[in-house]
Length: 156
Image (tube, rainbow, N blue to C red; front, side, top):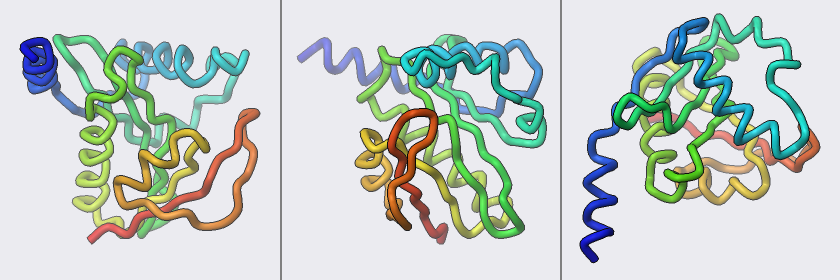
């Protein structure tokens, strides 16, 4: 039981904040996204066109200055944003870090005047988003070799 208390305490000192495009932290973000999302599919994020990311908002979760989770917010229009590239370092998966960074992204979107968040969840991750109040909207599609569900959440 002591180990569980230690694990919980360790995660209390996590800081979630924006990552500036092109910074050293952004390059760490790309490395983490590549490691978790692309390499298992035999893909490489560095082969993708990342130029549009300059206009997007990047959030990172840091523990002892180490980047442990990221997500990217893309403006779709004046009322909607899309959350994409949500990643939690394997060691921290299952410890509510994903929930915390998603909550921060939702707060940010609401503060900026957006009323809806859209995303495409990998089939195996859809349950995570459903627990956060996201709903399926449409049929399953295939992207980057995996099935994805389009989902959304109204912000209130």
